[in-house]
Length: 233
Image 1 (cartoon, one colour):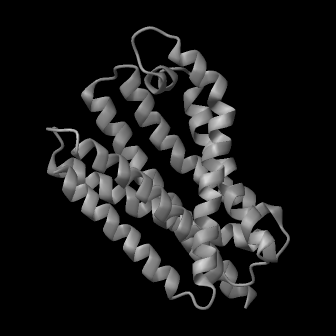
Image 2 (image 1 turned 90 degrees about the vertical axis):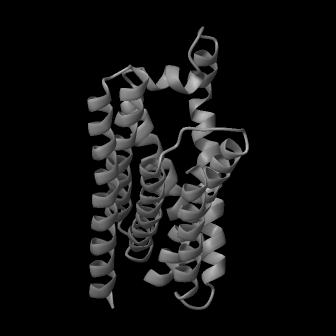
Image 3 (image 1 turned 135 degrees about the vertical axis):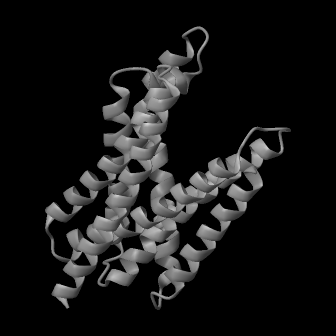
């Protein structure tokens, strides 16, 4: 079933590229800029988390990620850090490229979301090549559903970051950071629940909240950003 998730994720990536292409001239530059911004954001997050990661790796038994996910501060850091760093990873290239329209900002966000989906798809392919696994059809569906809303979230948030550039109002960037943090808080809660050995019911509820949080945040970003850009026209 893991191959179903892999194919579904690649379909989401392909759709993101098609939508970006429809945004007009120069779309590929913004698509690549979004991907580059995402890569830089991951590097920055890695540097910031390096001390905690190194410390966790010295702990006996659990892996570094599982050890960190079980800590009380994980919920805050795992949500706030991506919310701030990844949105700066959109805002900086948008400002550097002097973005003027919603379509360009949208293409940049799609680039970030598509590359993130490709990175996750690559990890799934590595797992699939490693031998038997117990993934179910439901798990595959959830994985594709999650990537769909993640790409939509990146795209919607990029339009808010673009508004921060063209209107020179930092509140739009802060809104993007806030929505991103809110979406990642659900995911962090789910990881934390698994790390501390919560019951199956509690983990199921945490997963439901995580998926809904991403969908709601993405919807708000798309609607709010589209209306704000339309009002500016």
